Image (cartoon, rainbow over all chains, first blue to last red; front, side, top):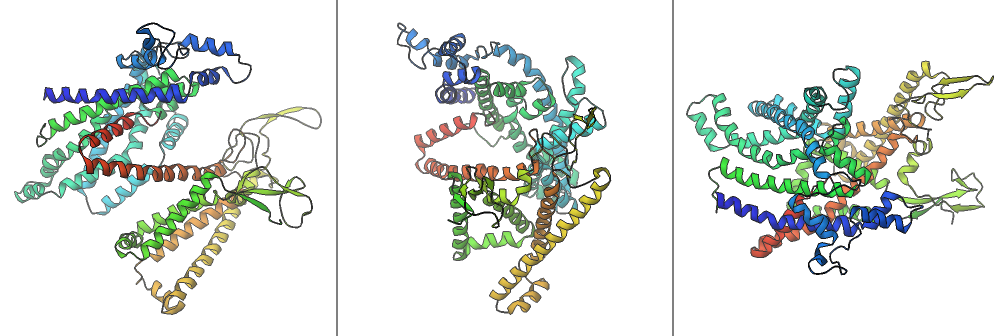
Length: 325
Length: 305
């Protein structure tokens, strides 16, 4: 098992290098430091000197790959690629274009993101699994038929609509919770209720439909027929056999997104004014702060790879039929 | 030289026409290949399949209408209205319009100052208005176009909207009946039993296709289009945005962008993906590893950023 995990981690290294090179190409070659300086300082009335100063302040004045002016190893070290991109490997994100420490910001903003994403995931999972089980229990009846129609309707509506509609009804008309904002400590709960509820509702349609398919597929298996033939009650069959086996694809589907919970949700956080990593990214995009965007893209990729790794490991844990070879 | 417009084909338009031609060619190809035709027939024979196909078709036609671009002709510096205008001194406008723009002309050109609510007759925010006697009031000013034909919006608006809805409904139903009649004539003319025989055949429900469902869905679509168009001529159906543009018009205009991004990226991606996928499966070994590596790397970069 341990040698398998080590091998998987080693597999991740070339992928990380690939991601690093691609993000570097996207952020420094396609969009050169000069372009960044101009987009920050403005096209008009900007002198060469101002652009040069702006780049020097942020370390963007160095050559991309090879510095001919330096000596020895510094030829490679005094470059943007070494200073900006390779440092991402040790999670040294440096400072943003406006001079703030990105690592500090990420550590601060991680918690509000998690405070929304974790309850959202857990409640959403409980709701959708019970809903899907219910539909699967009443399969091929009108309840099944109409539930699927409602699910398709729910998943066809844009998340934006749920967010704005929820803010309007719950926040403005009923005045139950504040429309947006955030607070420290336990006070934060009242700001979190609405985003979590809306997150759960907007996820119900798609997940329920998916889980229903999984349940129905399990229910048509031979072992279910055998369990029924043994004379087990329908509840026992559903919870003891179908649910347990259906949990394999469901759990492994969730494990992929577990690490990405840190990243938060771009839309939800932006609309509810929650200072998480999602709104951090959106703000950075709006301000054209490429140092932050680059760090977030890299962080997202790393978390995704960790998710893939966890999925493979969880497969072997949940399903004993899969052998490590 | 007497054309009231000068056609323009943008690159994306060309791609759209290519896509349309490909779809039509595919449909014709299906006719001679029963093994491919069968599954599609089954899709159309199901009610949900037929309705979904119809809605998609409607969506696609709007995108196609929005892809037919041209320079409108200017008459004395004004947009071409009708042939009664002076024909002598004309040139073509720099502006590029699409057929959809022409259909939705009132919504395109009726631009207010700033935000207004859906179906509103007054602006969303108060403004200083100077009266004739010099005194200044802070009121919600009337919109320049939204409900401008009403003398007393507070009392007349609901009745006016109701009559517009009825108007649109009637117009839509008339158009729908026309289309149904045309389809009946065309299909009945093609079938061996004649038009009347074909009608009886469809009415009796013996047709393999859910004709009644398709007709009902078509009626809903056409009536909805007509109602929104009639209301849109006099009001802003979804309100106006920050710079006063009609939101309904912009929503309809965005369909082309959506179809363009969705359909064309898929079209470009699909051949590449199929070739790479089959190469990985066929050669195995290091080629498979390499392709998987490229795919995992590209896949790990978050799309939203």
